[in-house]
Length: 225
Image 1 (cartoon, rainbow, N blue to C red):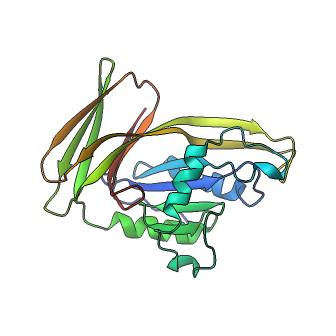
Image 2: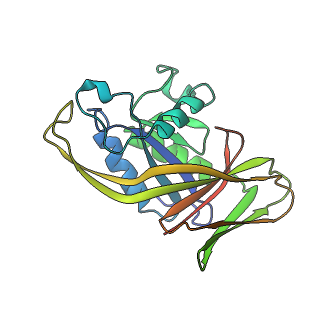
């Protein structure tokens, strides 16, 4: 088993796992995501999709929004690393930094791509803090490499335990980590000058992704409990 070596702690790499309670191949990827979520240098998010619900078990954490996010990624991500063997949406899929598509249980490949992205020079930074009932998002360019981007607020549940009673994982109790419940675009940023965004009445843990387009590369990210 490959060890998880830390990357640079000040530049978190975003890992998005598209998973389903009805997918028998997903539990190893779910466990790997939980390991990654414990790292300071990774923002690990679990998106539950609903297109396997017909197999006999309706995913209790799935949302149409998560399914749509994966579908938006499908024609844009780089699948060279899996030899273009899979097209469209599949589970378990990990998308790293909005660009690389990997089979989510392929531990060595996932760790290697996280390390590679961690070595890429920053083009932007994002800082989060809470002031009263407001979440304050500070956006800062680094050098001249940033570009127009969406500022995307991702709300998530840190931990969910599910007893699955039917379908491919019937009889299993699975722990899920950082389960996304809602994604909201809260601003646009030109990438050239510092910008402050305030969002009110957000009490749960969140991540902020500064991302090109609907499903492009992630320029910066941060999370807060």
